[in-house]
Length: 142
Image 1: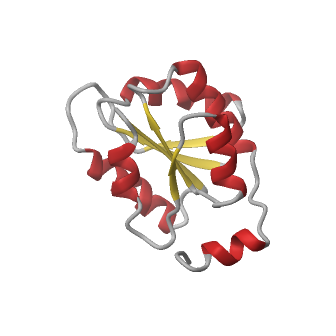
Image 2: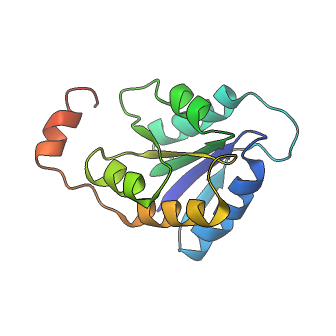
């Protein structure tokens, strides 16, 4: 699977670590920045991930900032994007099974490294259940 990954300066170090994790899991990774600890504006990075997914140049996306809140707000600006801010394995699993989330948002300053790794593993492995969930998603999505 091709995963488009982006972070602002607050999520840069976690992004770099998760790129390795994703590669070890066998996924292709497209890194849209940022590429250092220098300050950047998170909406710019969220827009890059959103555009890659909308253009068909990524199957899923992962966005990381300090809390994950800004990224989740910024990327959810399209009916085709269903971003979920997850803090544990359960919310990661449910975001995929019930909501068919195609973007995972994480907060580097509120989620530990080991927990973030497990969230990503579960989120990448979990399939959408469809059924009654698809009917609900259709009410706010394309």
